[in-house]
Length: 136
Image 1 (tube, rainbow, N blue to C red):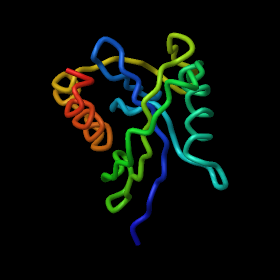
Image 2: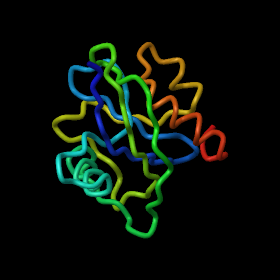
Image 3: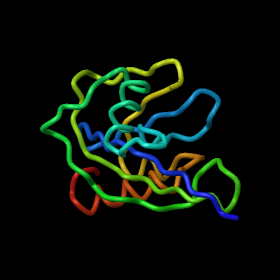
C-alpha cells in the first residue's frame, strides 16, 4: 500500500535564489522543513523544523502559504507520496546548519535542476517560484 509523508517546508529566497538543505549522509538538497508530527499543524511543524535545521526563527509578518505540493517522496520506497505544505517567509537570523544539516546552499532553478540528485518536491517549488517571478 502506498504511504504518504506530510511535511511543512520553507521557501526562503535570497538574491532570487531558493535555499535548499542537505542532511548529513544524503546526496540530495531538499526544502528546509520536515515531517508534521501527529496533532501538529503545518505551521507549528514549520516553526519547529526551521529552529531545528537552520537555527533561526521566522519573521511572523513575512509568512504566507505558497501552496501544497505533491510528488514522489525522494529517497523513500517507490509508492511513497510527498504532501508538502510550503510557506514563503523571511528568517530572523542568517540560516546556519545545525547538527542534522550538512550543507545549506542557495540555487537558481537551472543550478538546482543540474544537480546530480534532485528532489521532485523541491523542483515543483522552484518552478512555482519561477512562475511568480521570485527566483531566477
